[in-house]
Structures are given as structure tokens and as C-alpha cells.
Figure 1 (cartoon, rainbow, N blue to C red):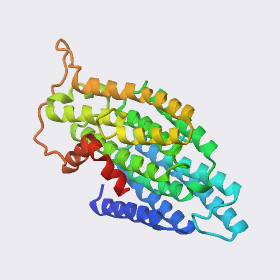
Figure 2 (figure 1 turned 90 degrees about the vertical axis):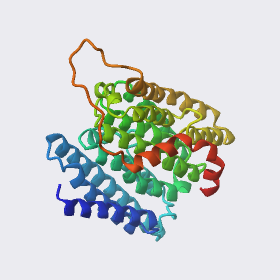
Figure 3 (figure 1 turned 120 degrees about the horizontal axis):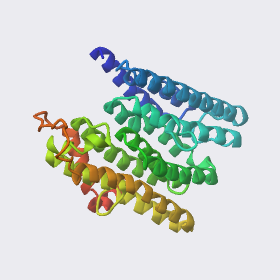
Length: 346
């Protein structure tokens, strides 16, 4: 890809995200989302592979539909209340349409169908952007409109996302699809607490972004796309496979790693709200995700390829590890003791 075109796309991506998260008017938020969509399309289709073209087409169609619904919801709200302020979402139809539009943009169940396919057709770096930065503007809109949204609908979508993300991830052999369904399951955790503690939704998103970024950067460093190649990456950078295992377990939410913090706080808040059944259901559904994280960790660190078959040995690489990988993996593993400070800052 042309360096100038890549720079323009990246800067437009940052500009669109900044406009949306800093706006309080529906039109400026919509403009930021549109800039984001147009900026990421060249990055998805830059390989000129049929899968990449298919992924960019699917992404464009779903995001255009979501943007249309969001604009329609804001116009209905402005028509009945005279308000374009994002926090003044009062009309029931507008609340319903905006929930659907933001859910499509995020990839929440039942609007998840595009997300795994788009990630599968993209490069690892583009997958990192789609799974983290591109979800920040819709999450911000959810945060701003959270008092107006239907808690029953959000709870149902959250439980369905956690269930489907866990079930569908069990059968995958492609690392990008595994992480796509992992993202859907984590979105369920973020959505279920949105009505009761929106700040906790943001904390969960930040920690999820940090841990997922670490995993994508490690997979990009070792050039790993399938579970079968995960088994041979231990010869490339042996210490990195150990870090990869710990980061996966952190994403699964096992103590004493960082990923345990948001799940612990969400279960605690749901229990305070007397939603014990909901907390129990989503906790049990997280075990599905734990299974495929353990499978990935098992393939990366415990399974050695059989010695009696012919395969290409991957020698240790001299390519320097990205400094961001070191930072994100360290935070993903060791942030739990600093949880009081994290909560104070948030």
C-alpha cells in the first residue's frame, strides 16, 4: 500500500474517532462515524485478495446500514423533542433504533454476522484496529445514551452475545475468527452492565482493548494465522510463547491476571443490583470462552509438533519485537494488584 495513502487513512481514522468521542451533537457524531468507515476500507482491502475485497464490501454495507439507522433515530428524536443533544435521547422509537444501530456497529448478537468474516479477510494489523479502535466510538455513544436505553433488551443481547461468542469460538481453527468471537463475548460483558454502571463498561473496554492488542501484536510478530501453526511458533521466540499463554489466560479472566478485574467488578455490581440469576448465567457462559483460550494456550506452549512428520522448522527470528507488545503484555498480566488505582482513575 502506498505510504501516503496509508498515512491519510490512519490520520482519518484517528480524526473520525476523535470527532465522535468528543461530540455532543448527533450530526457531528454521525460525521465522525462516517469518516471512520471510509478510512478503514482501504486498510481492509489493501491486499487485493478476493477475501479482502469481500470483507471490505461486507463491512461497508453493514456500517452504512447502521449509520442510516442512527441518523434516522436522531432525526426522529429531534422531530419530537427538538433536541440534537446525544444525552437527550427521549423518544422510545429513537432509543430502539439507536440501540440497533450501535449494536450493528459493534457486532452484538443478533447483528454479529459480519464481524468474524471481515476479520478473517483482513490482515492482522487491520484486525487489531477493527477489534479495538473501531469499537471505541460506538461504545462512547452507548455510554452517553445509557440512561435512555432499555435494560431488558440490553441484558438479552448481552447474554446472547456471551453465549454465541463462546459456542461459536469452540469450533474455530483460524486465530482471527477465534478472536472475533472472543470480541463478541466480551461485548456481552460490556453491555450487560451498561445501564447500572456505565463507567464499568468503559473500564472493561479499556482492559479488553489492552489485552486483545497484546494478543494481535504477538500473533503478528510470529505470523500465526491458524491453530496448526501456533504449535510451531515456540521455535521462533520461545519467551514470547509463554507471554502469549499468560495473555490468553488474562483475556479469559483468570485470577491473578488483569482480565479478572472487569469480570469480578461486573459480577459484584450485578449482585448489588439483585440480578443474581443474570450474574450466574453470564459467569457460566464465560466458561465456554475459557475452553478455547485454554486450547490456544495449550497449542502454543504444551503441544509439540510430532517428530515423525515432515514440516518446515521455523527458526528463531532476529526481527525485534514491537515495544508496544512488551507494554501491552506487561499491563495485561500484572495490572490486577493496581486495581484500586485503576478504579480511582476511572
